[in-house]
Length: 150
Length: 75
Image (cartoon, rainbow over all chains, first blue to last red; front, side, top):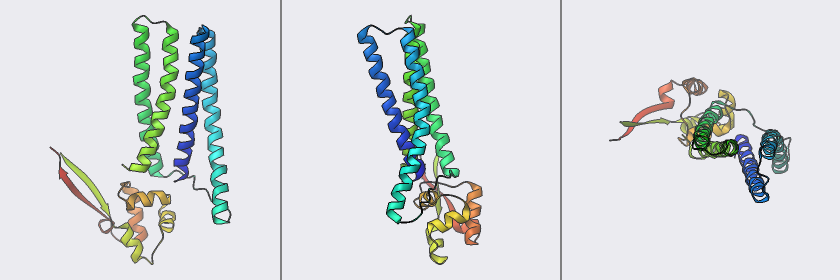
């Protein structure tokens, strides 16, 4: 497995955890009757900050773990191949295209709920949900392109 | 419509170039070893620029490394 694949896998796991956290917190809010603008926007902020911090931390962690594993296996100074060549860039572009596609569909569905008379809070909740889902689907697509080829 | 397919002889050419390793070829043409592996397994068709760099690395014309064929007719 290349460094890029490892990095995508770690990001995929992290975003799945973020999605799980988001859904659990939403469920708790609905059950407690605290599903209001203040709480939802605070959750928005937490999710966005977590996504940024987790992505940076995941990259560093992948570097460290890869280096440690390689050093143990080869008993030599680890060399991490983290350069992105044309294939990596192409796969990244294709994955981004999938992410944007899912994100666009999600945004449309979220706005549709507003157009059909649901409160704006539902729309904003769905926007974040589809944003995270789009990232996950994009990462799955990237891994699939690495494995299956194109 | 027809399905296109690009074949390559990279594995054979490596063999006839003193068993050049995938890593050595990757370093010569400026890509990762994974990209060489993907090309040898027909999982990736390189850009024209990379194709020329590979041909130059083996010191052969482009058509000795890559060939193009129509795989099947899709109705």
